[in-house]
Image 1 (cartoon, rainbow, N blue to C red):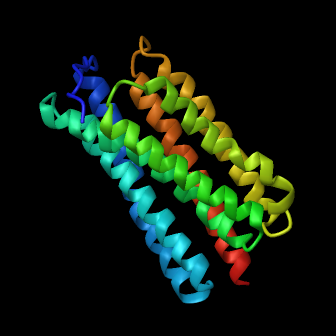
Image 2 (tube, one colour):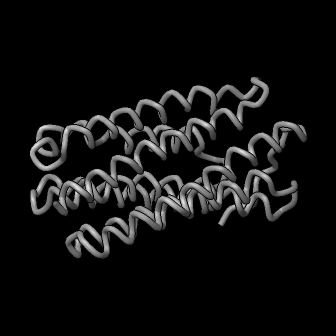
Amino acid sequence: MSRLPIIEWRYDRSEIIADGIVHGVGVVAALVAVTVLIFYATVWASPGLAASAWIYGLGLIASLGISFAYNIWPVTPAKWILRRFDHSAIFVLIAGTYTPFLVAALPDPLILANLVGLWGVAVFGIVLKCGWPGRFDRLTILLYLAMGWSGVMLVSRLLSVLSAATMILILIGGIIYSLGVIFHVWEKLRFQNAIWHGFVVTAAGVHYAAVLTCVIWQSA
C-alpha cells in the first residue's frame, strides 16, 4: 500500500454544514426507501431479482453513509482512510445500481458479460483507490462515467424486459449524475461540494425510482 497523500481540505464551516445537510437528507431517505424496496422484492420478486435489490440497496446506503462520514470528518489521518472507502463505494454504487436491471434481462449472454464486466471494473477501481489513493483520480472519474453509460450498448436488449418508465428514469438519473461531475471538478466554486452531492442525492433518488419500477414490473 502507498502512503496517504497530503490533501488540503479547503471548505469552510458553512460549506461543511450545507454538505452535511445534503448528506443527512440523502441517508435518511435512502434508509426508508431501501427498506421499502427490499421488503417488496423479498416478498414478491423472484429470488434473483430480490438478491439484486439487496445488493443495490445495501450499496446505496453504504455509499451515502460513508460519504457522509468522510465529508464531515475533521482533518485527521482517519479522514484519508475514509476517503479511500468513500471513493471505492462509488464503484459499488454504480455496479449495484445496474445489477437489478441486468439481472432482469438474464440469461442473455451479452447482459451477463456486461454484468460481470461492471463488477470487474468496480473491483479494479477499488484496488486503485485503496492501493494508490489520490494517484489516479482523473482515471477513476473516467471509469465512473464509463461504467455509468455502459448501459447504452444494451438499450435494445433492455427495452424488451424493462418498462418505458424504468428506461426513462435510468436515462434521467445518468444525465443528472453526469451534469453533477461539472461541479465535482469545479473546485473554486463556493459550496461546490454541497452542490455536487446535491446532484448525487437527486440522481440516486431517480435511479431508486427506476429500480423500484423495475422490481414492480418484473413481479407483476
